[in-house]
Image 1 (cartoon, rainbow, N blue to C red):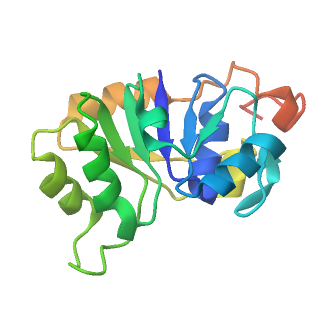
Image 2 (image 1 turned 120 degrees about the horizontal axis):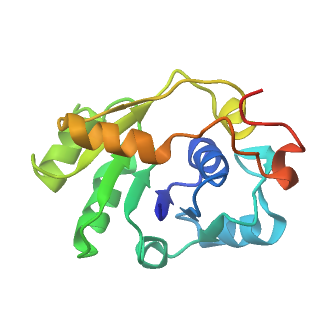
Image 3 (image 1 turned 90 degrees about the horizontal axis):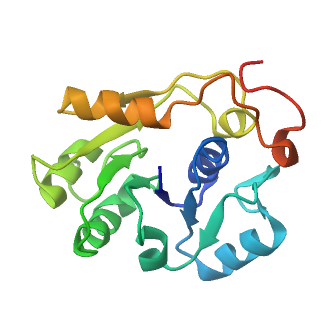
Length: 184
């Protein structure tokens, strides 16, 4: 699946590393300087310095480039930035699924992420929420964790969970995690 991960904090970076075992994600950083640093050093020294970015993770500071040709926009920004990013995704003109991995509430309105998504995308958009319990570093290191994907449309949630699921029989990127198998 072609995935744009929007937000290059610890959580967005961890998702990009984890999903790179089966997908070719593009990680978007709002800060172009941070994107350039991540691209050249192959690590997010600001938010997740312990983990190398696999070569299969593209990094960009250009949102339009991140979204081009992508089937899924996975938003991993702070909730305070979610409305703006969702608006830019919607304005990109391409039909794609949207999943957010934001937690908390929008300070200005007091609304939860699903309420913000409903306002920006409409009630019938193909979208859902990805949530833990999990820690970014553990996810990036391939340690056992559980995530839940919830959506109004149960079939959408099942399909996206199946697409994103990391199977234990796939090997982790040697450059990031040595020879450890995903299911260990």
